[in-house]
Length: 218
Image (cartoon, rainbow, N blue to C red; front, side, top):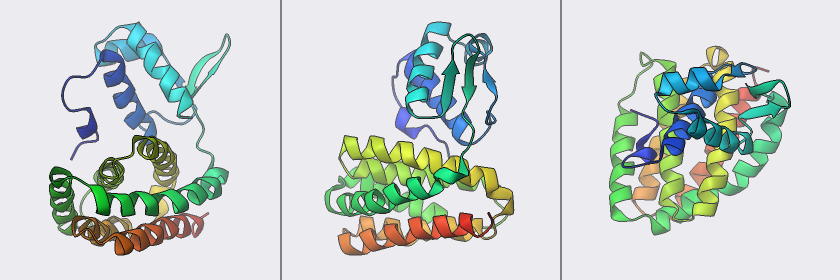
């Protein structure tokens, strides 16, 4: 399981930097509030500073980094008070994406979703939580792609990234993470079966369960 299937094939250096930094920020491998040192990142990723700068501009638009004049660029703080606003948007858009995916996903994406559902069905609690989070991200991103609407996809990826940062912040205190990930199996099967009503309902329930689970430990 990787977080960069969407980056398969030829991508620019700036795109590669963006994707790698984005997922490090989402998974809190770059901790909230940490400074972003362009020179260190360029050396770590093996690319020049110009692609790093281009990537950081996009990440600032995504609300994952923030730049201050004469101070530099930093990973944004994870603001748990944003949970309600993020969930409000996801509650509207995630069911729409699931419905559209059920209706419009091409065959090769349905096959990918079916394989992912089978993998998740076999997960157990012994899997590391980071691996479980990677599955969660991959499922959502795959559904957004399958919806065949790039505006919807871009919006939901940004919202899900912010929601995932909140989840990672409280992950060690959350019970039943593997059960939450397994909820995706039924959702993915509904999409593969082109059952739009069921997919829409399950997506709404999943988002509501996520918010309730996080709020229960705050």
